[in-house]
Length: 63
Ligand code: SF4
Image (cartoon, rainbow, N blue to C red; front, side, top):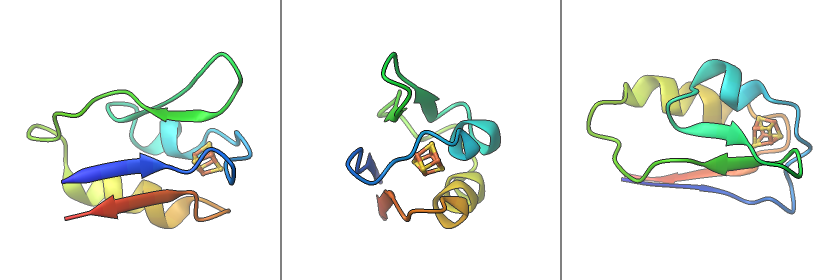
């Protein structure tokens, strides 16, 4: 699985971090960053929920 944030589209609302803080965190610029590349122990539905909840569709996931 791959998870990517397109920071050009991110508005730093923090929703993804609120939903799935194991994977997303806002960086010093206030933009979302993927903080892990190990998704083994992360609930995939939570990642999907964060992706679908992003108001600007900035998150992409590849199964
Ligand atoms: S939910 Fe989308 S717009 Fe909001 S911080 Fe996350 S990636 Fe950025």
